[in-house]
Length: 117
Image 1 (cartoon, rainbow, N blue to C red):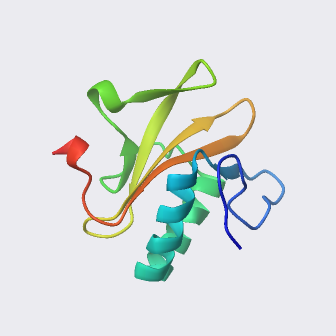
Image 2: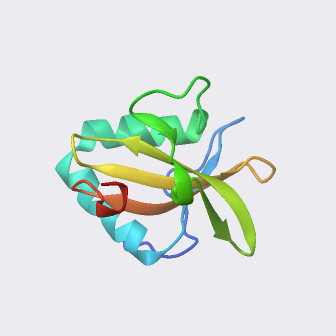
């Protein structure tokens, strides 16, 4: 099945979990590639987004981005933008809306993103 913008990242959330959704088609396509490249690590990252999208304290591999990348706008509203390092180069960037209990998967990188170099 092919996923796109606003589609959920299956399966549906359980009680108390965040709903993880693709922000755009590129994120859905990147997700499929990352699942093929690093299935186990991608599952661990998915579980983290689902249950604890903003860990306190943040870790070296799971933290809010810095500087101009620390927030991003979705539907006219700014949200914190976080990163999970899935592999040595693979990254997930996402926004999370605490009020709607939704995580918006924005960017999926198989290799290290140039924007953070």
